[in-house]
Length: 269
Ligand code: AMP
Image 1 (cartoon, protein in one colour):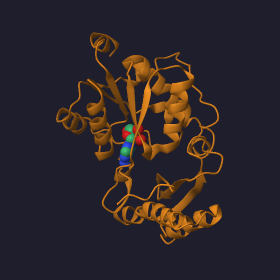
Image 2: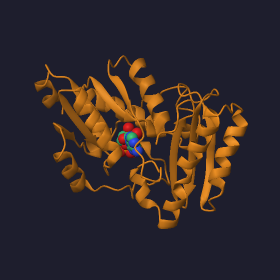
Image 3: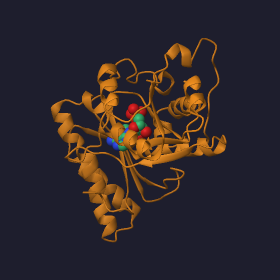
């Protein structure tokens, strides 16, 4: 990968890091990268160190032929698919730890997750040396962690954040949605309904944090299949002090979904 990008010294490079199982959300990142850079690199790597024990590493979907087929039809100059043993050969023990913003919420629910993310993103930045890297607002806390990392490690990489792509009923598109059975899939639309409801209340003038959180819990709580892990309002920069970013983590059976919306912005659509 480094040999290839060294041939591209005079060009700007946009990197889209993914774990594959590509969908409309990834597509939007690739399109944005294509519009803003001479060269586009998409990485596909199911990063084992960002999965906790008991998470879905083994069953994570890997439809590599479909992924390559989708990317062939797009403005993509290279697909980087490192092997696990090349990224983490025996004896590799270095990890990148982003303090503060990686600790609450997703960080607390998934110990080691953001360390795995920060480590692989750092390695991808070294391999590709992009001018810009594209991330989805879908993973809002990951965005905050990656922005912190990019600044703190003097990477010079501009972090570009792309809006959440949603299904017709509002469910945020995700590679993990394939795990949902039809009843869970229907119930999963409650996350976006909750965000919409809270956003409408906020837009109508409601500022009471507890009332807004309770509203989200009520909307999701109407679904018997939903188990709320958290429904919080946080500052999008640090994820710990209060703010207008509504963040949700909700499980349906064995599938854990996350979603978010900044209540200060009107809900789209
Ligand atoms: P993943 O392959 O799930 O690690 O996601 C790769 C990138 O795509 C991450 O930056 C995600 O935030 C982004 N992404 C995933 N789903 C969506 C979505 N529905 N809308 C926008 N971006 C997304």
